Length: 452
Image 1 (cartoon, one colour):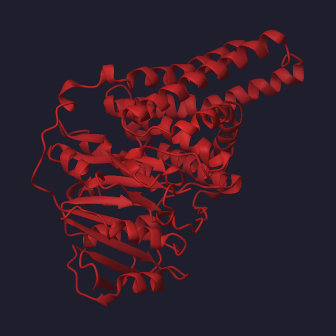
Image 2 (image 1 turned 90 degrees about the vertical axis):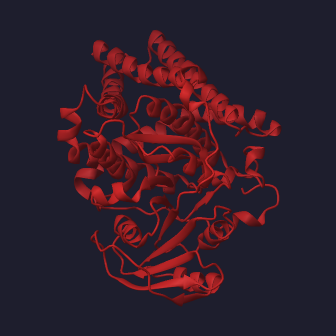
Image 3 (image 1 turned 45 degrees about the vertical axis):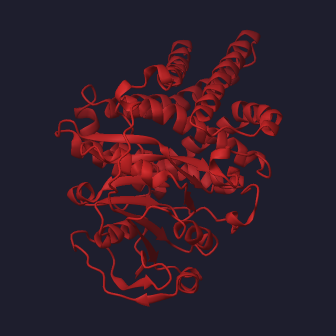
């Protein structure tokens, strides 16, 4: 039993340690440092699926209509909303029916009518029958007229430099898909490059903000350098339209972001030099849950998506386990260290508590030292990397951040571990449940200093 315990402690330490080192500037490829300004803009179709988004749609429209990228078309896909989403789009955009060319190459629910904004001619709205997020995205791809497709959640706000950064990255014709960097909308300040702020965000949102820094500036940066990026966040994904059509679009599943990323890796597995990238300069903000209930629903859905793709892409992952980095990290880090280890270590804790060994002094010292040191190092690396890319927290956040780190190490991570346990089991009984997280309804652009 002790051997199993220490083995899973080892693999749980190994991957965070690897990513904490590999994300550092020392390991950045030289050719990625040199940036030549690309004057020619590629056309971009921005797809925003909407299902009952009345609480956030005004913020989204305010963000989209101010984008400075001249060759962007915005397509909202109203996926059978039953609230005021469609009426708000009408009032905000002054919509008029239009004819828009589409490919008819992807299967999706019927698009009842296509609208174009009288105020902003580059903004369109598809009003369709409800079919789920993947179905809505397929409809958007079908109607997209530009070679690049950006997928956003309705609560996502792009920074002004996001699409130019996308244009820069996709100047390389070998790139077929990429992910942007995602920050927490509740920590946004008026001028994005002024950094981030904890003011006004509750402890749960603060912990999630720290979690996102680790996920994007440590894990994803490292995985992208290994060419093993397994999840392009649904909040901000970028693809060539050709690649999306070639893979058959999105599959109807509880986790379309993981699914489409693995589809892209499978797509390029026999195509030399093709790439899936992470674009650090392409930054967006997305709203995160503000209650434990909504957070738990979100994390359970993420875990169910992981398990679903584990089964669906299992043959590909096993076949390329030692030839494709994405397969190695998905199985060893995601499954063994991220899922199986949670069950094994929890089982060992229960067994030791029954046998009376749980509260031995040596055990407590080793375990507390492990979670404190590893957690502290991981958080500090994430803060340092975020600051390097221009997204540091305010000076007045220093003291609150210490409490956030302690909360993250000793409380938050155990809640997310329980979500992994529950989500894995729930997948086998309720695999299709989406568990949509409630929007706050806050108008983020209204505050002059901070969004939170």
